[in-house]
Each structure stands twice: as C-alpha cells, then as structure tokens.
Image 1 (cartoon, rainbow, N blue to C red):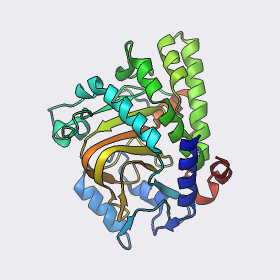
Image 2 (spheres, helix red, strand yellow; image 1 turned 120 degrees about the horizontal axis):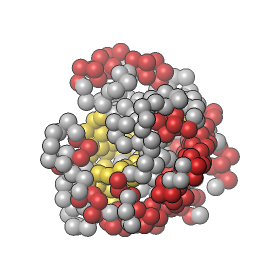
Image 3 (cartoon, rainbow, N blue to C red; image 1 turned 120 degrees about the vertical axis):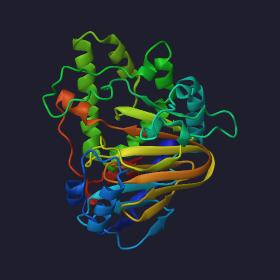
Length: 334
C-alpha cells in the first residue's frame, strides 16, 4: 500500500506539471520508418530536420510531456519506486544471475542489446551484467505474426528464461514490482490497461482450451498487465528505438541500483531526464529515441507489451491517450 501511495503521489505531481511540445505524434509516426532501430544516422537526421525541437530542456521533476494535440508522449516519474520495492528488485535480480550470465554475446555489435562490449562488471560483485526477456507467453523472435487473424502457424510459448523448475520462482520474485508498474499504467493509459487485461484473460482461456498447462501456470502467477519484462544489468544504452513498441502505447522503464549520474537522453525531443535510482518512465519506445548513461551498478526492468499477442487473441489496438483522458480519480484515490 505504501509503495502504491508513493507512485500515486508522483503521478499526481507529474500530471500537475504538463509540458506541451511543438511536436505531432501522429505525423511523426507516419514519417518514421516502421522498422527503425533509431541507429540509422541518415534517417534520424532527416527526421530531426523535418521535426526540429525549439530548445533543449533538462528535467528533474515529475512531468508529463504532451504533443501539440494534447496527446501524451511520455510520463517522467523520478522517485516513484519506494526504497522497499527497490531493494526487492535488486534482490530478485541478483537471484537471476545464472540467467543473466548466459545472455551476453561476443558477436556483432549491431546486436547491441546483448553485445558484451556494452556491459561492465559490478563494482559490488553482486549484480551479474546481462539482458534477459521474461514472459509467461510470447512469440519467439522472428515468429511474431502481423495483423489479425494471425498467420504463419506459430503459436506463443513460455520464454526460455522461465522454462524449467525455476520459472515460477522468478515470476513470484517480480510480483510486487509488476503490480506497481501495472497500477501506474492504469493511470497513464486507461484504454491500454484494460486492453491488456482482456488479452491476458483471453490467453489464459486459449491455454486451457489447448491443454497448455505450462503457459497457464505461468500466466496464473504473472501479476502484470504487461506481456513481457526485460531485465537489464549494467548496460550502456546507446540512442535507439524499439520498432516493436506500439506508437499509441506505453512501455514502462523502471530503474534501481547503486549508481549516480543517471541520465536519459530523448534525442528527438531535445530533452534530458535525470534518471537516478527509483525513476519510472512511461512512453512508446518506438516514438521516443532514447539512450541512458550512468556510473555504477544499474538495474533496469522494462515492462512492455507486444502487439503480436493482442493480435493473436483479437484485442484491438488502443488509441493515443490524451492529457484529459488520464484516469485522475484512480490516482487520487490510491
């Protein structure tokens, strides 16, 4: 309850501090290469020329960024995560060390998310550097169908990180943090929240009807409305986008750990955020080109939604959320 009160207060403070930018999300999305990773220099320069920002800004107080039409681009929530939840996230991540250790690769730098050159060892020798995806039910990379009804013959499965006897333990260790991120989404984007609830219910029914007990068991334990989580430790994060993040939706990035000088750069908006331990940021990681720098040991849990799962069960994609659509009563009552 105390953790919910803290995030509710920071959400309230952010809502009371709207910042409107000379930026149109719909026009920007139409101009954006749908498969853009944010690392194609010429494409990004062309976008910045077509959609220039007026001035650079540095933010360290709770804020809501809006476009010119009142659509919310991003929620910035510093100190939204209580010390108790931060400690729990750190403990859970330490216990995932055996999974994180296996995640890094020494291959091409283009596959930067797991490229060893972007990671550094822990100063405290507790946190294992690495990046893993955790999902009770998702499509493996390269097997995601597009459109509805889905085609291709592939079906969702439990992520590799949860297969085996230790899977339920991993999920249980994340439950309170999962609930906190979900509660934040309930305020940030009510339509997306309820669409995600509907998808989880439909996936559970599908699993039961097809005797997929492994998926059903993991879905029962999964406490988040988000489909998946990325757990990232001690990774330098270059400017990038996630082309599979829906432009109308929000992913929620939560950061904890023993580090300083945390900085998140939103290069296409001309904004930098103080990104210290306890921060929560909600946005479309496709629309917002972002990167992170820090000094020390940082743990990031990114909660995200995959359109492919919504398509699989026939859940319509939500619209962009406007500032006036925010479920204010929920935040106040919390």
